[in-house]
Structures are given as structure tokens and as C-alpha cells.
Length: 473
Image (cartoon, rainbow, N blue to C red):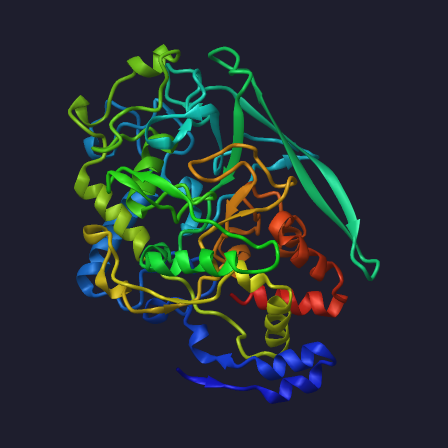
């Protein structure tokens, strides 16, 4: 491994931070967040590029999958049989409608503290107590597993979302004030009657898609080792894995993707998103997202001329491949004094326990949906892929397989500093309530309460350094 120490940085800082800097080597490999797959790109397209080591055949397949990822699906029946079947109920007309430029979805524009338009990339999972087949959450009887605020002609959408915020204020130890936003959601103009009084709701915003194939290639044992190591700790940090049903594996396996690690494979996550977000059926997800109480939805025309799944296996496989090889961009300013100081503070606050910096990938298990070029790469995603109790402020109180209503998967941090360039915002956490990295940190509680308190005690200059490091990822 190519390493060097930056001793001169110690002169810029004093006390414990100077000592930590002196003991923290600069890993040059860390600039290449995705190993040989890394692309050196910033700006609008930083999350849109294929793995740098992809061969010509892979690049052609990436481009085919990208065309189906970006283009709108249309209502059936249509002369474009390969792209019809939208809805009847849906959230977006394309994958890129929720993940613009392969990035993170935005919250609806606000008029004051109230949403001026209906959300697209912010979805609302619904369930009632109990479990469905294979241990999944039990869908709300009338509106199913997700609220749909859009529909094709002749079908009524489920209703509308009203989103408001209230301010939550506080101060750092040095007296600097801060203001957070606590969201509140209401379902209005419900088209199919009231929801079950026991309904549990989980808002979830669309995340950036870079490096998903690399995350899938992390060996299972490496993730379980994270849980075992944390179980031996004397503090509150005790991450646990989720185990979820995978339609492609046809068994319950380790969850990796989604805000609650509620999807085990990229193939399952993608096929399910086609079904639940766009109403596009596939071989393993053949049913439209309609309940028996939504008669118009059940009776609406089916795509692909009514003959089988609306997205064929080959096309779906190309879209999954496209996402598997989306490359993480290289880090920026890795050797700067400010960033190096922030990295030392990140470790002092124990942020690196959950946001584990690095792994070496194994051979991807997803076969036709991936490539062996993702194997044996040293990557720096900054996640343990485990579930953590994040306290009552972030709780949705909705179980999801093993995940409790207070647990969330540690999100990868790679690319976080480029979100404003790619998507024009930095809405973070599961529902986008945090408007920047510091607000996201200040919402941490539960297992992360000690880390939050550590940050609250930092000086303004130290907070600046911490944010410089995180935004370099």
C-alpha cells in the first residue's frame, strides 16, 4: 500500500488534534474511492459515469441500460411496446425522475413551511402491524405498501401529501446557534377511503446510486465482522445486520441496500422499484401495485400488449448492470491540512465506527447483472451496512424485516460532497430533512449520541475542518 505521513500539518493545529494528525497516515489509495473503477470527475455528471476499468462490451451494455434508466415510460396501450405500461399508480415516470443524474432526489419546493408541489423522489412506505409473506412488512389494506400520488388517466391517485416543518433550535458549546427542521406529513384527499388506524408510515428519499455494485461485492463476512466487533465494544454502538427476502435468490439473505438495509441485492431493489414506483411489472414482480379496493387500478390496461411482464428480463438486466457499474468519483483535496485535520476529528468522534472507511471487494455474486471487474478492489464507501438505533428524533416506528422502527442502515458517505454540484442540494438523512452535513450530524442520537455530543463541543474551526473532510469524500 502506498502511504506517507504528513508531519508538517501538526504545526497548524494544537493539542490532541495535533497528536492525532501525527499518528494518522495519509493513504494515497483513498483518493481512488472505488479502486480501479474510480472516475476523476466533478460537476453535473460526476455520478453518471461507468466504471473506469470497464471494457468496450461493458460500456455498450451500460449505455443500453442507461437509456432505459433515463427515458420516460408511457401509458399502455402504446405503439412503443418496449416502453409502455406506466402505472396505473406510480410515483415517477422514469428511474431518473427519482435519481436525477444518478444522484439524490430532491424535496418538493416549499412555499414558506408548506410544500408547493407533490413529492416525487420522497416516497412513503405504508404498513400495519404483523408481517406479510416471507417476513416483509404487512401492507396497509387499502393503499398497499406505498402511497402513490400520481396515476394514469382514468385512475385516481391515492391522494396528496401535505408536508410541513417546525424549527428545532439549539447551540454548540461555544454559543453558536443552529436550527434544524422537523418534518410532519399528512395524507389528504384520500381517493379510496380512510387508512387503517394502525397505519405506520416511513418517508424515504431516493439516494445517489454510485458504487452499488461495489457494495454488493463486499464479502458477507466483512459485514458480519463489523457487527461482531461492535458487539464487543463497551459503548452504545451496536450495529446489527438485516436479513430480508430476495426475489432473485428466493431466500432470506443479508440486506445491504435501502434506508433500512431492506433489499439484499441490486437486482431485487431495481425490479421492485420498477414495480412499486412506476407500476412496471417484471417476471419476479408480476403484479401491479393495486389493492382490491382500487378497482380502477386493477382494471387498467396492461403494458407490453398485455402479454407478460412489462419489462423483459434482458432489458431489466441491462438496467441493473448500468447501476452496478456506476462509478464513484475520486476524492478531492485529500492532502490539504484542513481535510486531514477533519479526518482526525472524524475518528476522535468515533464516526468511523459506523462509517467504516474501507473494504476489499470479493467476486460479485450477482452474475449476469454485474462484472468481475468490480472484484478485488480496495474501496472507501464509509459505511458498515448495519442497522443502528438512531434515537427517537429520527424514528419512523415502522419495522422492516429485522429492522426496528428506530433503526437505520449507515448510509455510505462517498460522493456526499458532490451532491450540490450534481443535484443542486444536499438534502440528507432518510427523509431529506437535513439541509447539509452538519444538520445531519446534529440529528444523530441513540447509538450515535456520544458522537453528536463530541461534535457539539468542537470549536467553530474544528467543525469547519470536520465538514471539509466529510465533503471531500
